[in-house]
Amino acid sequence: MLVKTGFRLDELVSLDVNEISFEDNSITLKGDGRFYKRTNLKVYFDGETERLLKRWLARRKMIAKPGEPALFVSESGHRLYDEGIAYHITKWTAQFGIHDKNSKRIEDHFTAHNFRHCFTTYLRQAGMSREYIGELRGDKPKEVFDIYYHIDYRDLRKSYLSSIPKFNVY
Image (tube, rainbow, N blue to C red; front, side, top):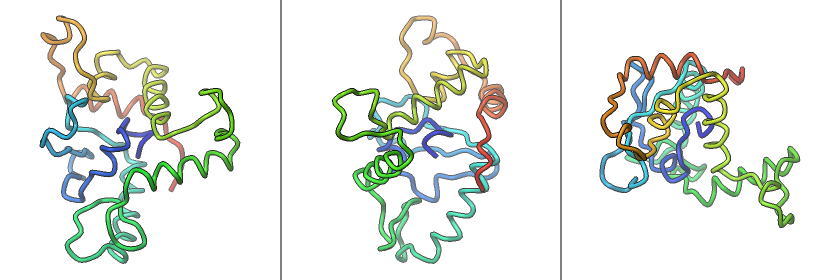
């Protein structure tokens, strides 16, 4: 989810099941002010992510406590929190040799935030415009042009779907 959506870790763990729309493969974050860094609350996902989400939702039904709204829950049935996800990201990336917790060099560390870098890099390499990437990431406008430029969300979704890489993970 992190590499396919550009979510920040706090955004990911805040997700509730009812924020997902399989009609247009989007997630709309709550607009309750928690995400002061994010301007765009609607995020798209591709067919590969859709399949994984549906598989997760089937598994989630077996473990989530009744009334738990969280999309991502632990084996105890309650919402996962960022510390737990961060722990597992660094654990698995260390096993794959791309995270060295003992190194003092920042480039030897792989954290949840690195997925935002990957997301941005993949879209840029696919030729997506900076304005669209910034919108998908939820970045605040930096220039007057950005404030007056209005993005067509149908074009944004189309551009996203043609640019996001497929990882063949099912």
